Every structure is written in structure tokens, then in C-alpha cells.
Image (cartoon, rainbow, N blue to C red):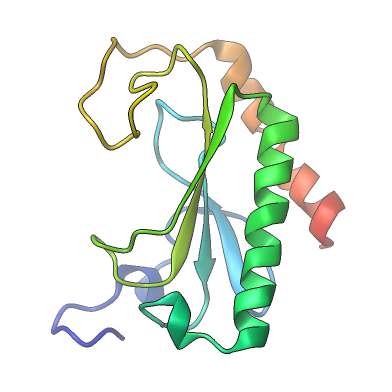
Length: 142
């Protein structure tokens, strides 16, 4: 649980469709229809800051973040990859791994900014995103 009175969303629920997990963390598909391939890497135990983790946990978590970045990059073939760890809305250690395309709704701004163009995702991107779970299993193990 977090220190506020509200329960932690990532302690209470997976935070998305689980694509891969181990004892330390889980990788989930973010429910962001404008961003197929957007994944989150969520620490399984509650901690609010990276500094709250021991050295082995930090190293293990970052190894997964970098593996997810590589898998998403290979699978989605984006123009750019974005990695972010904010935690302002859900104060639980997690990383956003977001493939970015020059024609996505917010590019070149952050995905949380005001959109610059209408909705519309190329169907082949959604299709490619379906391969992320299998690619994660190949890279990280089952």
C-alpha cells in the first residue's frame, strides 16, 4: 500500500494485460488505443521511488526495462522509443516503454500532451504489437 489513504492501483490489479512476469516485476500492455506496443514494467511489490529499491532490485528491474525497450523497438520499428518513470498519478515504481512514430497523435510532444493530429493508427502497427508477448518470452524466458 502507499502512504496515502487511497489504495495503490498497481498493488490491487495488474495494470493491464500481462505479457510477461517474474518474481520482481510484470510487463503489461497499456490500454492506450492510440499507442499499440505501449508497455509498462511494474514492480510487483509496492515502492514509490527507485531509491526505495535495493541494488539487486534496481538492476533486475532496469534489465527488464531495457529488454522490453529492445523487444518493442524490434517488433514495432518506431521512429523513436520513449522511456519514462513518473509515478505522479500512481505512486508505485513503474516504467513506461512507448514506441513513437512521426505520425502518432502527439509527436513530437509527449504522449500526455495535447494531441496534434486526429486519431488513427495504422492497422499494421496493431498487428505487430500482437507479437510483443512472444518476443518477450523469447528474450526473457517464460
